[in-house]
Image (cartoon, rainbow, N blue to C red; front, side, top):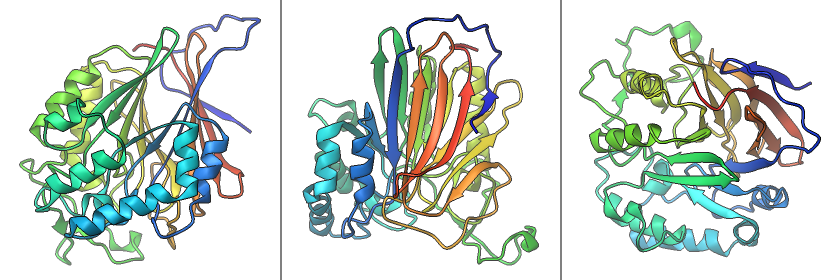
Length: 343
């Protein structure tokens, strides 16, 4: 059964004899370049208007740029990737493994070189704004008649402060965690995830007109702290994002995220505004043994290889259907929200 949640005040929908137009966007993350990737062929068969890679697009994990380049070449040569590339337009952001090192941030010494290889693989034009500033954050717009989808590709690596290793002195409810915690949350606001320049860019983008906004992040946004990498390691940055959505009156914001090797939908409340949904699709080839605790999870987890699919039906108020589709073409998660095109 399809369940509906309402992120904005409802308006009466006008009946129409003609079916509304729609936009479909597929997305995924965490694909090892040495493994078969039938998920990409399956995503291509849906003929989406766009496919977004959300990070760990290869498992580079190297300081050798020749090795990193060779891994991108191996991905590009895969018939499944070529099928997807022929079927639709591809956009991408990165996470740690294609950035260069596991859990790396701003101190990774080869981030400029790895950026060039990333832009080369994803065919970024020579005049792209991405080539004119540090990092790979970027905005794209997808039009459907007079309706607009704004796609904000965040960079959660280039400017990110060091993570804080977990220690036994950290006061956390240990009975909630049955696994070893890697990190603890920052309590100081002098740490950052996005960096000052990217925050300024993001604020300007959120003030621009759009009907639906997709914020794409390698790290999960709307989950609770779990001791692994996530926005929850920088709670002041997570709150800053929620505050920015509210103060800019940015309508129709959804997060698309990856990293964790399973799929789920999380929802975080934003008092004074509307709830923010975070659709995690992580597992083009990778899997994980267990999902972490997440009080904000409303659908999932999906522990098998999968991709995500967002279908926007352009009624007077856009209807957004979120799906997670597994490797057997089984729809494991389906959740729809309906809202007006403005706050």
